[in-house]
Picture 1 (tube, rainbow over the protein chains, first blue to last red):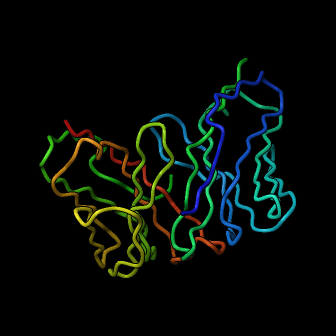
Picture 2 (picture 1 turned 90 degrees about the horizontal axis):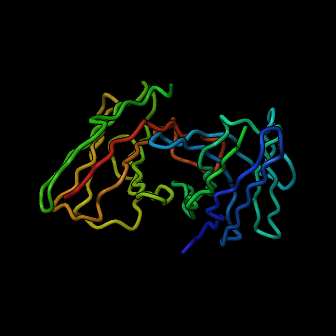
Length: 111
Length: 116
């Protein structure tokens, strides 16, 4: 049974700080890794996808993947109150058909 | 705006009843997947339909069933509702079937189902 583990939080950071969100996964065969943002009562919104070891940057967001350690992280630079949400880590299932999500980490950015 | 529409937005049912949830996607999105998200949990995969055929199923009992229609709409049916079925139900569409590649999922805004 594939698992995706995240610290549920809440993670609290002041405005302008770097928020670091972490995720581990159980299946070494996983190929695709995603970070979604979900505001309360809303649907998940894709922030980043990453497929290769290393860093991938998009604006204020950086995803980091380490397949040897089975670890994915998301860094949010210059955090804003509007970044306050639940961040979901997801990996592909064995068939490559579905996403397996973690429970999410709640981020709170205070102004 | 993802172009994926779900209805209804909220629904209240009683235990033992049946419910149908609907999803309408963009033209050309041949794949629709349904996820269940319980409070405080991440979404869990229910099943996927590709060109009107079931293409994969998660760990959900047969009372969860689906249909996909040629006009890019789909349904999720749940029979004999249980209290634990209370959740946000999300449909996600895509052009193809493979999330292991560079396939993007477009999520609808969800249907919040409450079972009393």
